[in-house]
Image (cartoon, rainbow, N blue to C red):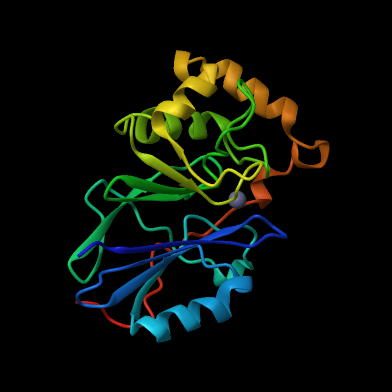
Length: 218
Ligand SMILES: [Zn+2]
């Protein structure tokens, strides 16, 4: 029986929420839930009899200091299980200090580490200021674009109506990433960054809660 997968888009912000579930155990998992989707998510869970086991966040911006949680070291072995399904957490820092991506079957949920289908040569994540473009470049080159060509990339936001890309497509579209031109990538980010953010990256620190289980999973 195929696993359940649903991508939800908030039209006003283009933010996307992902709902995954194992159809046999009916255990479900959310990635980057947007408040606008709360009612729909509750309805989908109820109508299919899914039990929400995990809520994952690829990253977070500007949480109050007293809510910051210690960053968990992510390794390539960090797995999150929901029923017979599981996904692997991959540390992909750069957009924020503790960004994570989640690999499930043939698809990667990469949050804002990558703005899919951007203009060729443009910074890969220009939507928001990036805390460390050099680190982001390393994450993209070593941990995202080293995945198989056909891997589906699901970002945190739609871009010009596009909601999914592939590793092969992103490698083709961004010469900086394709050629390994780290300095050019960093320079493109610096040029694209709004002036008020150029000297204030230290405040854009994140906490990243890898998992916020509402209920215990098996
Ligand atoms: Zn972001």
